[in-house]
Length: 307
Image (cartoon, rainbow, N blue to C red):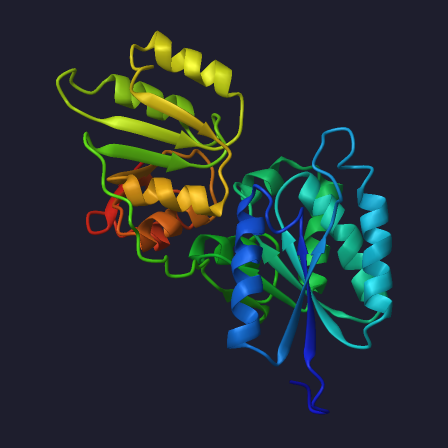
């Protein structure tokens, strides 16, 4: 609450709608539920930065989304603009909204998400790197998901440590489950299906298990499912793997409740919400020790981390 007793407005920028397919959208969904009860003095407004996720429309839809955002900013005398930012196109799109917010006198907070932002930054040319550094340095505050990203933002992007906070991702406590753990044991993974999430690693690792070991696996997420089904068939385990496609929150919870173990062999991550959702249900985790995952999973205690 402000000193004048006026509720504080936070404009929370998300790439799509809160029921979208990404981790930022899932986090936004959870926050939209929790804020009214836990922080009634804060008015949280979800603002999409594009109005379509279709390949030929998502970039064009940024313009009307930006215009609507500017109108929203003009209607509020004082607000904090919470910019959720990720590598590649997200950076340049969100920069437009960040610039508009600053020009209209609102405070801005950059919240670093997405996998491999350090690699993305290092791959850019000198001019692009300078633009990124200036944006992070000029923001009123920066939120990162773990010590790895704190070191990156303060060391490589040059943000003063007193303007950077580590705030780990979180998930709500799941409702009591009526699902039964399956037999044979079910291995579950959730996330975009593809090489970044290590789908190829998972398939080859499962194919290398002893033939007499009983297990099944469920792979949730969008991607080129036909190609990955064929890859599973070629390795001889196609009858043990089920590709589920993209799942909403309720369906993800049901599959996690049935599972015995959660696996995420990603090559690049920040701090996956899917791991937290699995751990909230008591599932042990096997994952790669990258990004902020080691700050989620205690190796040898709550799961196993591999190179």
